[in-house]
Image (cartoon, rainbow, N blue to C red; front, side, top):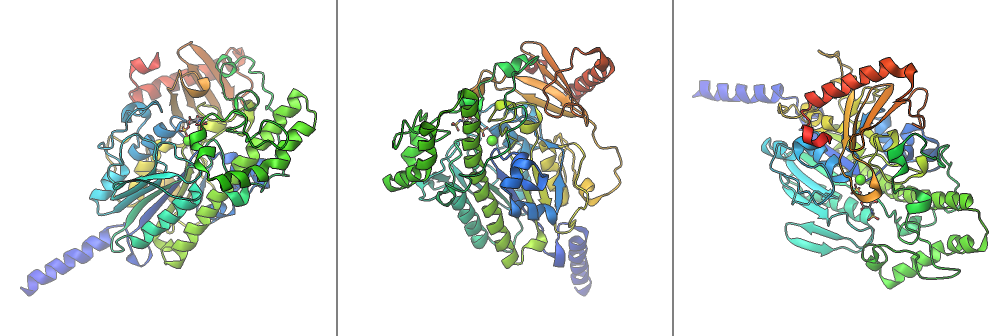
Length: 518
Ligand code: SGN
Ligand code: CA
């Protein structure tokens, strides 16, 4: 009997030593995955963009100071549902089946991080934006927004049904996250996804921040008045701030001096209709001075375009402020509960966003601003990486990397690679990838961005708008703003040939079916 007891005990000690799934003090490692909606790198001050200097994000920056900042992280398909499906599955859109935000229903029964971690003894939860059109699978608990969700007094969907909660969406998601952390079974590790709606369109700030940036002039991008020369697809889009932003819904403009009626208010039920009468009145008062000024000051069209850009950025960045507050609150909670040393905190956004570059809002393009995804990871055992990571990483890598960090086997069918060795500064068995594959499908669709795929290397980018067989090539070193399509320039003959070969090989590697390339 003693012998058996001894063997059992030795076995137990051995398994717990073998597992790297332990943080400091051998506590199991948790992951808190924070994802926002449409948070551009230009608006995250750890990345140092001039816009963010006027609207800093100290709480997210602290994660970077104590962790790892990824400089060249990209999405596979710059749109909400598809990016989220890629994060969950570690696969490109064609492989996980969620290619467009067109009502596609996500198949949650494939191999996903929550499914795998749940089977490995993790408590799993998702709180906030989900937007995949099927109920979350693999989660012990969920409390998600209805579809895109609302900023004010939003509806939340749980297994029990739909309930409206009074308040501001970012605060409510933060409170529910802390509430879940409080009530969870503390004997098991957790994988928790906190997914904010902000700063998604129509950029409604928290009441305390309505006037936060009222008098701040943000830098106007050099290419704000882009004429889309030699870029046929870009010329056909519908995401120009001056022309296409809805004056009421997006820019909160009213019909005249002292008016209480919004100009074009596209979907009253998700915006003004969600507010109480008092809330609406306080909102109108807060915007009154700016709105009156629009009618009291004469402006040329060009000046109006800049005025609209400022209005857009003021609200967008005020939404970001609440997101940053949320990160701060969660951080304090983890600190207070002694969870910082065994919780990996990830901060990212489902894709990037245009903050006036090319004259635009929204995303979808393979151009840098929307293609890039901010990514910051605070891993307590890795600590601060003095050098940010400049390798080409992508959201297909998230699932394999998280599994790797928790020492859980990575399924073969995942198309991404674990970037965890890069974070630890380990020498790699094989060189890291030199080229990324991108594919956007949603055309026809909102904002009229033609479907395209392409390849990006450290210096170059080749894009194919395959429905019209239009090609674009950018030299990002010479032309970081992607204004000069050099596809037909003989100087780039060799580069073009190499990029074509890289694109073909990525299409093969990821097995993109022919039918999706027409
Ligand atoms: C909404 C927005 C669009 C946005 C899509 C996709 N319009 O339709 O501007 O491109 O969502 O966004 S809105 O006025 O209703 O906000 S995504 O984040 O879901 O990809
Ligand atoms: Ca989004």
